[in-house]
Amino acid sequence: MTAAPTAAPEVLRRVFGYESFRGEQQEIIDHVAAGGDALVLMPTGGGKSLCYQIPALVRDGVGVVISPLIALMQDQVDALRALGVRAGFLNSTQDLDERRLVEAEFVAGELDLLYLAPERLRVESTLRLLDRGRVSLFAIDEAHCVAQWGHDFRPDYLALSQLHERWPEVPRIALTATATEATHAEIASRLKLQDARHFVASFDRPNIQYRIVPKDDPKKQLLTLLREEHTGDAGIVYCLSRNSVEKTAEFLVKNGIEAVPYHAGLDARTRAEHQARFLREDGLVIVATIAFGMGIDKPDVRFVAHLDLPKSVEGYYQETGRAGRDGLPSTAWLAYGLQDVVQQRKMIDGSEGDDAHRRKLTAHLEAMLALCETVTCRRAQLLDYFGQRTDASSASCGNCDTCLTPPESWDGTIPAQKILSTVVRLKRERGQKFGAGQIIDILLGKKSAKVIQFDHDALSVFGIGTELREAEWRGAVRQLLAQGLLAVEGDYGTLVLTDASAEVLGGQREVRLRRDPVRAAKAPRTSTPRQRAAPVDLPEAAVPVFEELRAWRAATAKEQGVPAYVIFHDATLREIATASPTTLDELSALNGVGETKLAKYGPQLLTLLTPNA
Image 1 (cartoon, rainbow, N blue to C red):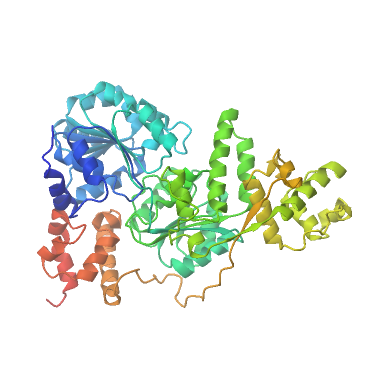
Image 2: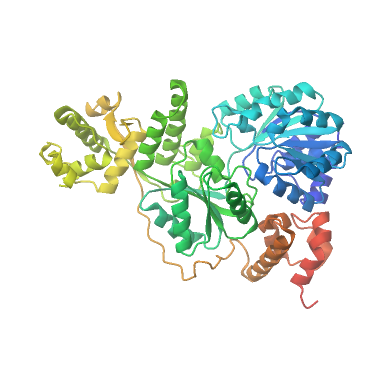
């Protein structure tokens, strides 16, 4: 079936409450609605879901959405039902009667969209069920899960090529927010979408401010960030280990920040409860491992913080992309230090897999380190990694730390030679290998217990590095590791030379190092820890109205047992608070107010806005 060209804009307005499409949305929707296959690369918050939801609504039959996110299917379906869309899901959380009801609705054509986990398509009964109904399209969400060496690989995704083989006339649309050029090609190959139209939107998220800071008691640094810039905001804090997750959550709670942990070591019920709280409550912080987050559709996440170095730029981009899905200003903050580099190198050396796999992991890490150590625009480097070419040497986004407070690039050749010489002398004269801490103590001339124990104060390099502070030496070691001029060996993070070290020691290679600018301390806020910061870009007179609308939304969401954003997004509440509509027609003209929500909530909102009317 080919949909009428006017159908998609009418559905956008009537169902979703928006007057116009963004970017390539309409071109993608028209192509799929007309029966074409598509592979869509679009950043988180770019409106990917509309690219399959609207074609499913304008085509005959039921749109089948393959999603790896069982824990979120209920919320996805609730959000669609709140818009008046007939949506359902089939997964392992349902009992037999619930599944039978959804199956009957599908066969009878009483659904617009059906969500399935990829593993269900390996079950013959599911395939027979789809044969009994009329499928309008297949949407493969989080399509990067098919990439075999990707950060979110799901083996069940490899079987999705059968969709085209079994239902060749049904259009397919695969979507992801995270794909390099190599991953893009792998998705196309594994899903047999080489002949599909490929849509690659800009990966830029201009509302996100990217900041990477040197580690210096990261939990306290995080607390300062939250108190100074994100008081009362919802956010995600990522840690590498379960133990770190627990300790960080406890630390935040003790310091007046409402926070809950999330990791694979918690029982399923606790994880589900914490995820549900994060989705449904305003201003909650969730501290998590990377087990949390894919598919999280909470639009008002104002910050994503990393207390440990992500393993890849893809992982970093996807995780930071969970901030600011509503397009409002948000922060991506990472604390990064020497131990992160040492730990990641050790993990790669001890990883399972062959040398090719370890080389792949090393390449991922080196790209992440390059992003951390750059003296140019972080956004330009991030976009360049995903194949969106920019002139990184001259580009300035104006919304990342290296653009706002440019770091200095300096000639660190002599300090690098001192570090490498110390490593050489320990090995050559003493037959010893040590980690960064001992080498820095030697350079600074510190007579620590360990230095005295091993008689390292007798080395010729003892005390030759007093021109730099300890933090600067740690930064220099970190950057030599990042540049491949030092390597990590063994379980204790001992430092050894690489093949490239000789060029530096011999004076044939200059070493450029980054010096972070000294940032002035901000004046402490006078607000209490739980006092919410004033909304950004909202007229002063509209702030109390916005807060009243948020309170109404929270109560309504609690009553219905759904996340607050299912009622209305923050962006819509801001428009309502600013415009102060007095009639249903005026309210319907605002973004995010479709026919169903207008009928359901319109009278309540007008009463709230004009209490004395």
